[in-house]
Amino acid sequence: MNEKENQNRTTSRRRFLRGLGGTAAAASLTLTGCKPAKKGPETDIGVNSGEIPTDKMEYRVNPKNGDRVSLLGFGCMRLPLKSKFGSREAEYAIDQEAVNDLFDYAIAHGVNYFDTSRRYCRGFSEEFVGNALARHDRKSYFLATKMSNQAMRSREESLLVYRESLEKLQTDYFDYYLFHSIGKFDVYKERYLDNGIKDFLLKEREAGRIRQLGWSFHGEKAFFDFMMSPECGIDWDFVQIQLNYAEWERIQARADVTTRYLYDKLADLKIPAIIMEPLLGGRLASPNFKAKELMKQMRPEASYASWAFRFAGSLPNVLTILSGMTYMEHLQDNLRTFCPFEPLNDAELEMLAEAAKTMEQFNTVNCTGCEYCMPCPYGLDIPGIFTHFNKCLNEANFPENPESANYKKARREYLIGFDRSVPALRQANHCVGCELCRPKCPQSIAIPAEMQRIDQFAENLRLERGKAGI
Image 1: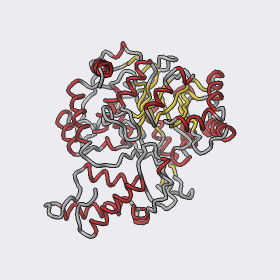
Image 2: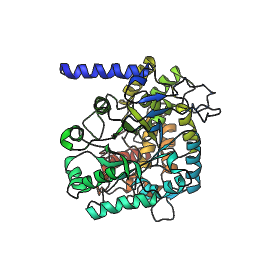
Image 3: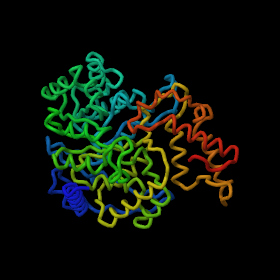
Image 4: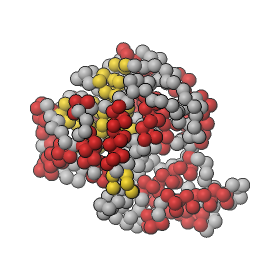
């Protein structure tokens, strides 16, 4: 590491610690209502209980236009379902009543930022989000969606994506609009330059139908640097990045860059950061048993998810943190973290750094559960397979060696749990290696190879050969 890079890292850490110490009000984003969180009784999963105040939500003021945005944002990638595989062929059967209840409760407790996309929930998210939000005053919330033209790249198709979003969301303007999921020059050129969509979106911002224009990053450091440079030719209002304590110092699986680098770059340019995947698709809501022990020792009553949210929220240049809250219990636990919000102190920051190190010891699959890979043409439940595998690793409930004391019990629980969580016809052994899923994955997971690894492990267990090729 050269001297300049070392100075930047030191400056970044000081900036971060200043935010932790409560001086973030001097930063580019203004914090309001920051008070110590009340502690409630612990449950078996470490979630606080008790009444949630309706007037203690933490807000950040967007320096670009003065929007007062809730630090907790509602991510609409994982809406509640009536059944996972519903009547609309292989698509979701979203529970509109449950969505309405979640949104009503969130708004009543101060949440005012809702983020969706035409790609979320197999293409149905915008429709159900629009139905739920149409029941509220349009000026009471900020609505974000994206130019998700991955499969519709021509100008005519991309314009259709834009118009359909307006229609489904039942609005005539977007508060926050994004160039969706880009990280490579060739993809950016095809989806936004060759078809003129970049110029179209800039004109829509000029006309006021887009109030704030940004982009979401999944990709290479060189591309990120280009997009943030004058050469790109766009004055960005915000950027959406994946940020969490597990990847703060570690190269992200899908890229050649750390979260710290992305955040520092945006902070230096005074461009607000919107945070996605603060829980890494839910994995940080139930981390490995070693990380759990560290967290429980420091704050026994806190949920594991709250640590991840407090990490992201303690950074002063963060405008809002998106969380996909499928169940009321998720929403309530998150609200307790943000109503009011308590930044991390130095000791807690050091503990999370230690927790992040423990995660490098576990050979989990870096799946965030976005379901961009779905539906699988051969019927696999790809996220479900990864979720069960990761869960067993994180909980140390993993059959490693036939000679170990708990092998028989762990073997039985893994196989039975796998069959219960993923139907037999949707398990890894049905993967044919067609590779159709791989280019769709924003985390760049080699999905067929991981399916083969997990299938081989399960097969070895069935034959009682123990640990092999985990």
